[in-house]
Image (cartoon, rainbow, N blue to C red; front, side, top):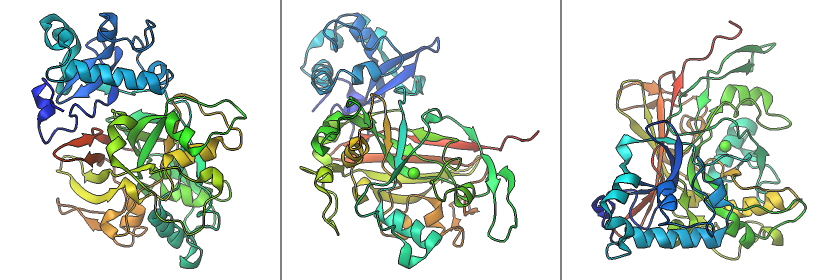
Amino acid sequence: MKSWVESANSATTQFPLNNLPYGVFLDADGAGSPCVAIGDMIVDLAVLEDEGVLDAGGGEAVFDVPFLNEFMDLGSDAWASVRARLIDLLEEGGDDALSGSDDLREACMIAQAEVEMAMPFVVGEYTDFYAGRHHATNVGTMFRGKENALPPNWLHIPIGYNGRASTVVVSGTDFPRPNGQLKGPNDAVPSFGPCKRLDIELEMGAVVGTGNQMGQPVSVAEADAMIFGYVILNDWSARDIQAWEYQPLGPFQAKVFASTISPWVVTKAALEPFRTSTPEREFELLPYLQEPGPMLYNIDLEVALAPEGKDETVISRTNYNEMYYSSAQQLAHHASGGCEMTTGDLLGSGTISGPEKDQRGALLEITWSGAEPITLDSGETRTFLEDGDTVTLRGGAKGDGYTIGFGDCAGTILPAVKFPA
Ligand code: CA
């Protein structure tokens, strides 16, 4: 598909016409407005809606708010019709309401380089899963030994825990190293202070578009239809805080200080050509978890680490297709007991690691709990993150001559807050 926006036809853009991911940008006054990315530009959807060129909600405005939730809540028919309308407006030879109007183009199209992005949606609740088999096996081996690496439930249940929506932040939001309770294996009692083993987790996040009613489970197919799109997610983790606190109820303070998402939500429609199946099952899943078709996606992922003031080094490359459970299965599992899932809920896939050392999605695995430091291109070594480090996650679904991208998912570690002062 060719667009009259020339930069969208470049082989290197993350945002060709068949991507059209949704985000929220901040205008010159700092007010947020929903937009789509096309090439190196964005299109302000509030302006298109206000001018009567785009109608998502049958005459009701949904883009006049600084989040996508009202649009997401309309459901899959509206998502499809808005996508079709935007493609018509941006395709070469399509409707010329935008391409043919200098005034409208000037009012709604801005270079991406000139705008700051905000959180694309209000996060309802955030649940994080643990669905990567290589990751679960590596971490389980380190924490419990090789024989007990995978917990007995792991091959039957998409394991997860309820996280915090309040500290899900958009790419570019820096945050301090967390403080917490720490107790090394040789310490008699715990101490309180800055985390010394600060880590990343490379994940995909599924964004729930439409919910279910409390008490009403959904099938995997219904769950898939409820998902609006996907973001790249860094589930930052404090390993030393986690190791002391995690039994028996799972991570708590180790994961709540920040979770970073990419600025762009890539729609399920854009990812459709990249659907792929979950791996063969060691145990047949219970019927409510069985998938009617391919529910994972073939998305190349990478992790880059840059010390303060230095160039980045790519420290891992993997693919979303490594997961054992899909987001649709996780969502169906979540609702299966009667939990109400709502518009804007975010489901973390779990850390995505491939089978090889340079395909691992967390420093804990890459450096084998700190025993095998990595050397960066700058010559520095790392076991875990240091103050000033910037980690950038990237992802792209690679088609024939085009890439569906998510934009950078980046964050920088600031020094810990002095507490108690
Ligand atoms: Ca995680």
